[in-house]
Image 1 (tube, helix red, strand yellow):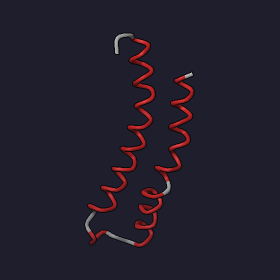
Image 2 (cartoon, one colour):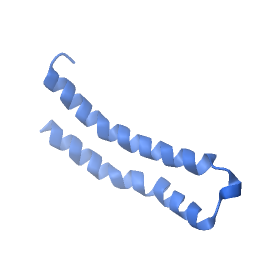
Image 3 (spheres, one colour):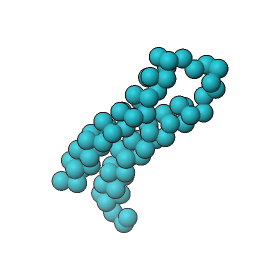
Image 4 (cartoon, one colour):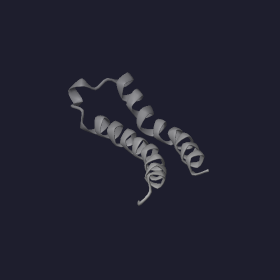
Length: 71
């Protein structure tokens, strides 16, 4: 991207998406790679909520930040 403003706009729209994807992947890795010996039902419930609810809930924030930067 040749201009500084163009690079800033591209990076500002990419960063929220990378944050959402990294949140999704990190919670999935933690949920599936943890040893079963340290598993407990409350911890499993928290991981399930983090894995399934938080990333989709962050999407509106991601797109609102992107739309604000594009205007």
